[in-house]
Length: 308
Image (cartoon, rainbow, N blue to C red; front, side, top):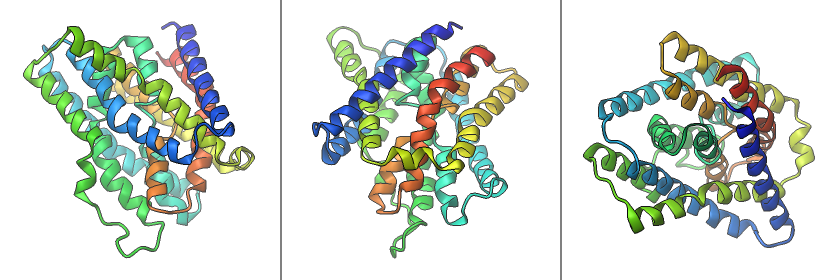
């Protein structure tokens, strides 16, 4: 694969992130605006990008999609077990285990993963990636919330609210799956509009991430040695093991690329958003998002060059 293409994509993403950082320092994106933009990306633009990929895809691989969904669910169950083992082996502070587990299980597979996959494999890869990580949307609002709320002292800590699944983002992802399975397709003005709005996902998400990083002391983020141990696992160990399993199971190159690239992404920003909502100390999350995001500019092209 053309590594220069990946490097180019990562450079563009980081330039947009730097813009978001600068806009926050200039007062143009404050905390309130950043929260609103986060919701817009996670609930509207990212799901519409998936729907756009469905509307332009072939409906001939319905059985394959079912296999992808089941494989994704099994993958996330393995991640949960793996995360618990890593926390014990690397001896992270016990009080932070629930947060480290979430950060290991949930990667930034859509906001950063989509543009990288789009440059490597085209628009079709976005839909297959969304189906592979369909379990993400269920587990982040169940297992994820349960873990995050363990870190506060509220009476309702650890309780899963099913209503949290009924958000626009999850509903639109379900719509994408139904459209694919029923063979419904569209072109012309409808498709162009959905695709145009969906394509806002990458620039908006990176500006949000840049603005988020601007709100916290970077020096504190890069001085924590545990963040580098964690980053090695999140950015290198997990994707390398993923690639090895795919080769062992004789998975084709298309799916191997999708799962390896997305599993090699930084910590999901949604973990931070849920932490803020639960009113916990998010310093551990912020530090690891910062370090993994910066280091991904090196590790993602490296993984593509060596493995794919």
